[in-house]
Image (cartoon, rainbow, N blue to C red; front, side, top):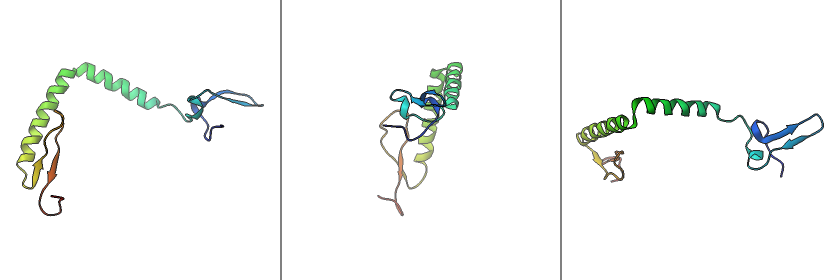
Length: 99
């Protein structure tokens, strides 16, 4: 089955006479690799390493606690039971809501 798009790492060899496609799965992965994504991932790892994962978790805990307190003060919002310790889910009650 020939590929329907070209470019990137999907071609193994190109000459004036012929094109040889790469083996699967590369044959169907046309386009430039996500270079910016790889650079961004590296920067994110450096950031987390510099700040420290425990400091990030503590900051997240403080933000969640603050958000829960503020949401509890808003009339018409009801906090839904947390399924995970790092999330805050709520619904609007009353007019134009599903409850």
